[in-house]
Amino acid sequence: MLLTRTMIQTLRRARDVAQGWARRGLTSERKAQLASALTSRPFAAPLRLVAGRIPCGECTVDTRFPFVADHTRAEMFWGLYESAERRCIASSLASGHDVIELGASLGVVSSHLARR
Image (cartoon, rainbow, N blue to C red):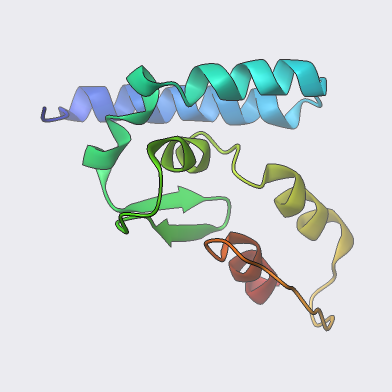
């Protein structure tokens, strides 16, 4: 399946809408419903074809590795992946602060911390 330019633009517009919803302070139940819908197979599978590098907040994450699941790619694309952590970083940490971050995932939080 090849994605056309129009399909990619539509996905990007939908991503912007989803990220706006996520920032509005939805209840945890609504966020879970939104995440479940946007990371379901129809939405997640085509993201493998968009590119291996997906924008996630202020960083771009390489997702071409086989251990990165489709739902994780979708969460990144839709702006839901570690969104609470990224908001905390943006609102709580000033530039130049020292931080010890003990991560065990893809390095999204570490990447955002390094950009501060």
